[in-house]
Amino acid sequence: MIVKAMLTAAGLYLLLSPVRVEAQTSPAGYNAKWAIVDSLAGKAGLPQSALKEINGIYTLARQEHNDGQQIKALVYRIVAALHSRCGRSCRAWRPALTCIISS
Image (tube, rainbow, N blue to C red):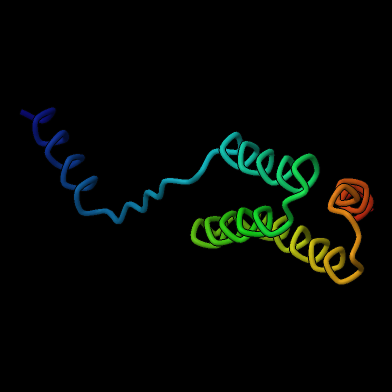
């Protein structure tokens, strides 16, 4: 009898307590998205396509409140803007990003 009352109380507690469950993209999911950005920007030389992917990652990270990925996307945006203004090839993205991220 006591066990049944305890189980009922525990069940009610779980039902009535506020539970916040959000699905977030796994780190591997972000890594796959960044691999696409790197291939578009570096190998394929498609800066506008890379920028679309970067914006998509930023939007997803913002929705998921993933600060680290938001910052990374903003850094990539800045580097993309600098390279487009300077007229440099997108192949130079990786060294610039490595320098910025490691400092």
